[in-house]
Length: 325
Image (cartoon, rainbow, N blue to C red):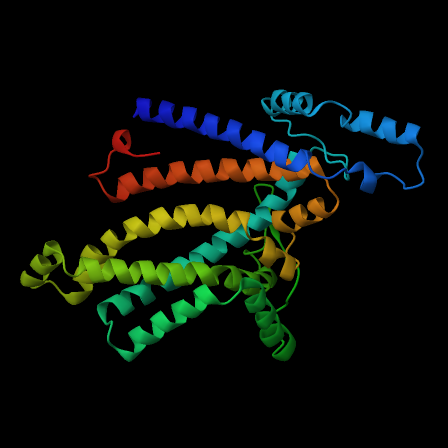
C-alpha cells in the first residue's frame, strides 16, 4: 500500500511538471496581453513599465522558472485584469462548477443505471429498444443546441424554469450552494440536464452491456438455480458487478465534465469556472488561464486515484499494489 502511494505521488508530480511546461508554453507564448490591458494611446515608456510590472519583459524560460518557484508555494500568479491571486479568483467560482458537474453526474447515474439494466434485461422489448434509441440521440445531439432548445421550451415557451443565473444560495461551511434552496434547484435544473445528457447516454450503454454480460455468468445462473427472487438476483448479483466499469468510466468522466462545462456555463450564464476561463481567454489574462488548467490537471489526477480506491472496494480481487496508474 505504501509503495503504491509513493509511486502514484511520484507519477503525479511528473505529470504536473510536464503539463505545467506544456500549458505555460502554450498560453504564455501566444498573444500579447499588453495590447488589451494598456491604453492604445500609451507611449513606449508606459508600455515598458507595464511589461516590467507584469514580468513580461523577462525571457520565456525565466518566466517559467519563476512560475515553478511560486507554484511550489501555492502561488499561481496574479490576475492581470482583476489584480488578485488567480487561484483565489478560481476558487471563488469553483463551488458553482463542482455543484453543476456533480449534479449532472448524479443525474446520469440515477437515471442511467436503471434504464440501462432494463434495456439489458429486456433487450427485445419496445421499452428496451426505445431506451437505446434515446441513448444514441444523447450521444449525437450537440450540447449547445440541446441547451438552446431547453431554454426555448422550458424557459421561454412554458415558463417553468429560469434560463440563466444560479439563483438563491445557502452557505454551508463557508461554501455557497444553490441545491439547498428551491430557487437554486430551479436554476440548476436546465444546465444540469443539459450537461447530464451525454453522461446519461454513456451510463445507459455501459449498464446495458454489463447487464447483458452478467446475466450469462455462472454466478447469476447459480443464484437463479437456488430459487432466489428475480429482484435479489438483479440488485445483488448483477447490479454490484456492473458498477465496476461504470465507476471507472464515470470517475474520469467527472473530471471531463468539470473541465468541459464551459459550453453549458456560457449558454446558461452559470457563474462557474467555465465562464471565467472564457472571459480570461478573451482578455488574455494568462495567469488565470494557466491556474485554471493546472487545477483541472490536478483534479484529473486526484479523481483517477480515487477511482482506484473505489475500484478496490467494489472488487476485493483488486489490490492497490497491483493497480495500474
